Image 1 (spheres, helix red, strand yellow):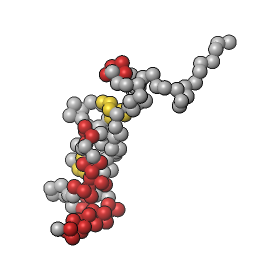
Image 2 (cartoon, one colour):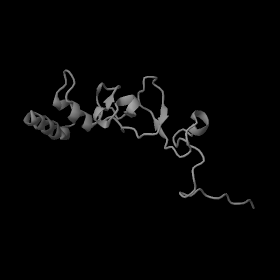
Image 3 (cartoon, rainbow, N blue to C red):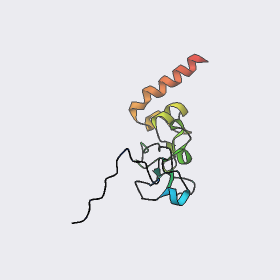
Length: 128
């Protein structure tokens, strides 16, 4: 019988920053610290290639369902998350804060977002 290998525990320090999606060891390839969090991003970066970073992504576009990407791909904040595939705001937060793009109507976005959209516009008008 062979020996059982010890299981990794949460208390054990990380030995490398490894992507859980593609297995890339970023400690070896990019000299990342072993304790750095790794996020695999499938967003539409300018290079149009998957890449890695240490910040969470913005999730999936409400319209096309594809990954929005990260701050590098889709906007610096969730309030700026733009889907380059659809050409529309990719999150409710972005739609509410940024407003309609040229030629769009509120009806083109999910109906449950309309209340927050109009409430944001109303509060802006009252503060002026």
